[in-house]
Length: 150
Image 1 (cartoon, helix red, strand yellow):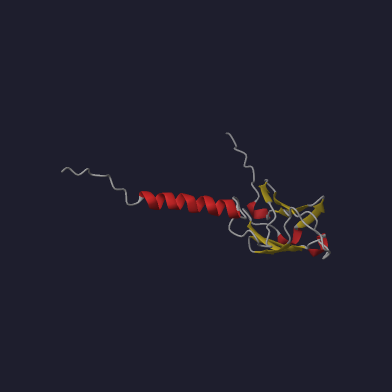
Image 2: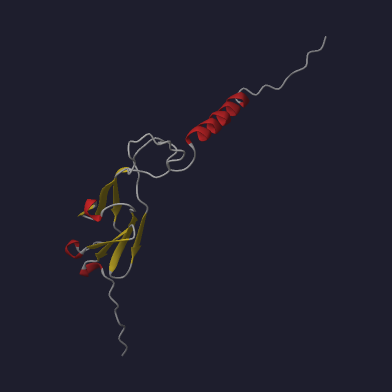
């Protein structure tokens, strides 16, 4: 009587189970930045930070907000933008088929790449984009040095 030896893979089933659980998780919660908090009312505006020779410019997408409800502060080199986007839904018996817009309060802190003059910071709001212009301090602006020849 001969017995056949079967190759045993103890972790094969665990790997397959892991793949199935990952697929189930993605099917239910989705992918992307909101995947782990699908029912969260928290949202964070997208931000661009650009540095020029004389200033640092921060642009934040905050559509639908009243500029009076946005707070901007600077502590050291940390620029913080806070606000709240309020829901426009009325509590009538409406049947929503799709809700993708985010609501709620937000706080976004950005570490500036250079020292800025806090007294000269300006903020503008136009078409849903908040632009914060931060002039650099005199000591950190690049200075061209000419080379003298003899």
